[in-house]
Amino acid sequence: MSEVGKLPDKIPLFRGHTAAVLDTDWNPFDETMVASASDDGKIGIWKVPEGFTLRPVGEDVDDIKDVEPVKFLTGHSKKVGHIQFHPVAENILASSSGDYTVRIWDIEQGKALYTLPHKDLITSFAFNHDGSLLATASRDKKLRVWDIRQEKIISEGAGHAGAKASRVVWLGDSDRLATTGFSRMSDRQLGVWNATDLASGPIGSFIVLDSSAGICMPFYDEGTKCLYLAGKGDGNIRYFEFVNDEFIALSEYQSIEPQRGMGVLPRRALDVKQHEVVRFYKMVNDSLIEPVQFFVPRRADTFQDDIYPEARAGEHALTAEEWASGKNSAPKVISLADVFDGKTGSSFIPEKKPEQPAPKSEPKSEPKSEAKEAPKEEPKEEPKPAAVKEEPKTETKEVSTPATPSTPRSIKQDDTDIFASKDVQKFLAKDAEKEDEGEKEDEDSAWKDEDDIVIVKDDKIPSSSTKSNAVAEETKPEPATPTSSTPVDDEPKPTETKEPETKEPETKKPEPTEATTNGNVHTPLLPKSLHETLSQHGVDKTVEVLVDHVTKLTTTVQSLLADVEKKHSHIQSLEAKLEQALKK
Image: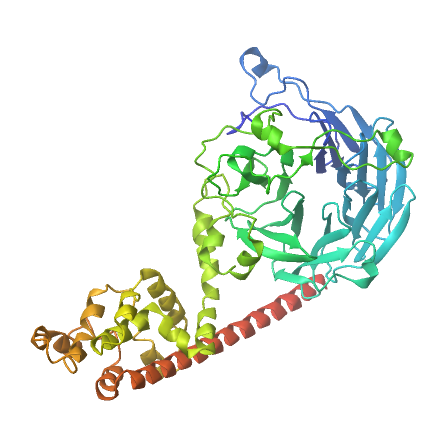
């Protein structure tokens, strides 16, 4: 992995299969061994030669030799679609095939130890924490949990109702499974299951993700208890924290480059000094694989034990013979503090500048608050990869803006919240100051650009509609909020001449009044009706008018959101009809 960049035109290849390679998996206990599954029905076992390089120099350039397999595992009658090494036992490999079977192999002996028959094509499978059980998902829309050595189903239930393939992953050392799949209407779904009682269905209900067509590839991180969902065919990676049988949405990494496949680096190889929590290797196309790294932005230079529990050591706990005889064992683990202190090294950690992790992924320590504040822009910006990509930042902001209409709801719940706003509070405080009742309020009500921007975003939604002229008039006072604070300070001063008659300087300021009538500087601040109301009836009546304006704006925004939901539902139904027509 240190040989990054563009490869030469001629490189050594691993040749041996007579058809397309469909899946690969590295041996977790031997970094030089990799297995491959092929359309030719064979499983290839390969050893990376010592000193292997993709960039030969000197005389080696003209004498590049391909790598041949150590052995083939044969027994499946049709193509082999998925393979996975056992998480605890040495030289144990599982494979699924188009012959509707999952086979458990002893690589050393070159034979299948166990066969798990299914009624349809197996689309995904996963070992549990100690490798004693195997969960499978198949095209017959069933989930099954097998006792491998007994070759017996211990739990079975109906999975996702959609016709597309499902994926399954075991959630650490618990008895919970996570699946991704599709509904009958082709919505992408996420589900949590009790592995011992699949017949009862998912715990709670399915979480609807979106309506995209690509399969979600699930990856569970045992250290942070986070589930990452990478969409096949899109550039997004969602991530959730698993707490109390629920998935709490944290955030989403976005990229304009879709992924065709994804691999994850073992936790023992993470860059713990830079607070890296997960690293993916994203296959963009046949000639490009790029790393996508997630970091927790912490300034501390000490080991962070809350995000780095013990990790799998990369050493087998059982031999193939011991496991086949019925023994079980938890995986061997190491302390990542030893990696941090340099007692245990890793060849996977690339050299990088220490300042890179600063803008990276959000901390995991506050998952619940982030789940509630998901529409905010800050969490969207945080999960950035180490690879230089500017586009995802702008995409993330665009995704978050439609959620801003939630602001009017809080205004509607309590009218007093309106006047806690910096905008309105500033206006009211100026009048209250001259009545000797609100000097402190005036000091606490500074105009801020952030508040102005939020209000403008909310108002852009109704202003773009073609509802009524009244709505257009109501939006006039708000767009002026992002302007400079100078007209704001001048505007209320014409009303100040009413009450404090002792101050001579205030009688010398007729210009602001003329500006509000003839100029363009102050006119957008408030409608003429509000100026008249303020001058004739005072603050209380003005407040009532403002409340009425806000209520109307809130109603308009809610109606627009309802229209958007209807259109979205209509589009989904059309997609479903189109899919049915294509199937016919």
